[in-house]
Image 1 (tube, rainbow, N blue to C red):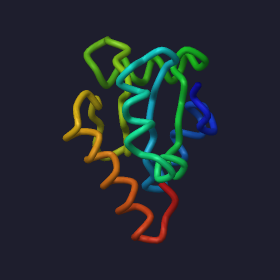
Image 2: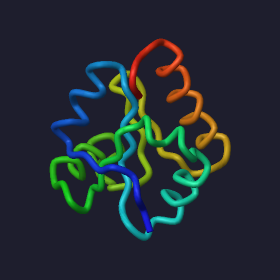
Image 3: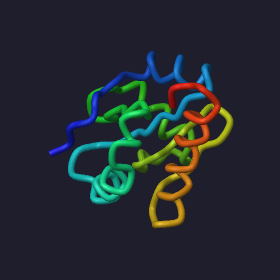
Image 4: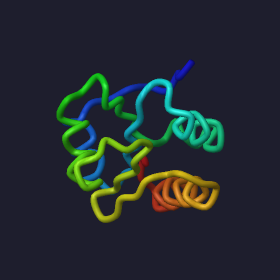
Length: 106
């Protein structure tokens, strides 16, 4: 079961504006579960948005991915990418850690 604190697209916009990391996900997604597991406690410092519970978030993800609601999608406002392998999962960890090291909240 996914136990991260959930947010919505409005909050996600604020987080990205402040330089944070937003992770878009949906229940039952094995890639989302793998990312959640890889991040461990570090994942608590990202903002998680369930695209099945927020139509605006789903529309945003589709706008980033050629009309496809592909998850997990990570967005910082400056960069976005789909997390589909170990390399991209490590990239998310680095983004969150860099934000924390800079004194912010991912």
